[in-house]
Length: 143
Image (cartoon, rainbow, N blue to C red; front, side):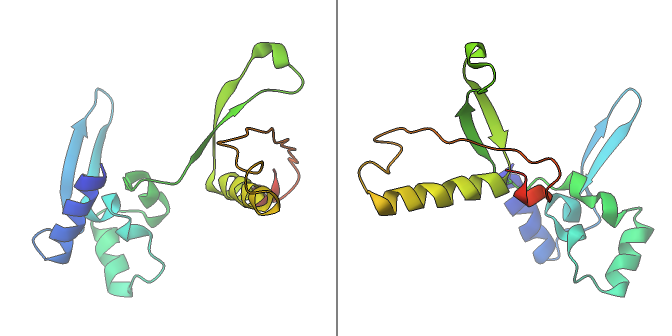
């Protein structure tokens, strides 16, 4: 999808495609889905849209609060192999986590590598991390 995103954005920038043009239309049994050029490239979500641009979106039937659903840009994500401390017998599972937790893990690994470049490198010497979850904290601070 990254190549598609790049091509669509380029066509919009060159004026060969309007940002409200339908690029893909999927017809379902109960519902149809249209992906618009600007939606695919994240253009509808910008905070810097002028009044004229916002009006153009409304006229095209685009709701800015739902525009993220059309965005096909890749998002950073992190995968970890984890074991539930309360149930180690269940074995390891793959956890796909947010950018926020991934960045915290990267920071901790950097700290460990700074302390000891050899032993701190988890690709050479794997070591465990303990995650603690606080459901009452702000989303970015829950782990």
